[in-house]
Length: 323
Image (cartoon, rainbow, N blue to C red; front, side, top):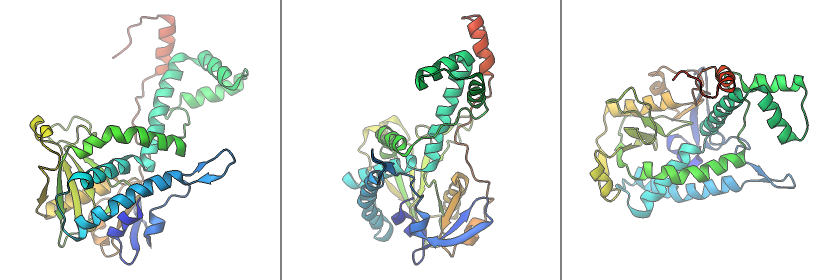
């Protein structure tokens, strides 16, 4: 979490913190709350640590911090030109920079690996391992690898800091338009307080199509609390015509309401993975919501028996597999 961002929810440099499911509550400095040790650390050929990723993220934060400060403290709105572009880029980066996105990539990779390995069969796995490690493996070693690969969660896969950095670099240009092209609304609350969490960019589903999943393309809106009193709501364009207008032309300031404050805070609480952050005076705001257990599963994988499918495929290259 960017430290400058958490300062918007702090008092005297201290932010109240809840570790889900909620029994562990404490105050801490925004510097401690914003950091995960070595999360982005790279190591060179000599084993020396490098903070090049942190530095790159810091450059984006230094660019965006004064822009958001003008929105929050000076009432500047709407944003235009380079300022709007910078905030859209920061939102896109924030969406993919955290542990939840790293877990998502790991779990998706594990799911596809499980499917491929299971359908290929044990002997295909033996051949693959031989090609990669340069030696034959024993039956006992194969048993261990096969059990891992076909387990419900799939093979154990960890995305390195470098792999995560590459994912950020590849993904941000692709998802940036889904932030930039929306209709932006700012909401300023005089009395109601907002919470934030370790995943502050929340996707709100379209209630007209509850059966559909929610993603950056299909979300009715994207909700982002900017500070204790100010929030950002990025709505989907109402029609294709709005895509032809200049981004920012439809940006407005929404009147604050109790319902809007509750919606933002509900999205924050629901979307939190492990940590909820808020102003030390706002504990009662959190207690108005039901808290949940820490969330570690980002991808729900199918429970199909791919091992059986693979056996049937090898026995009959054109089987009648279930849909």
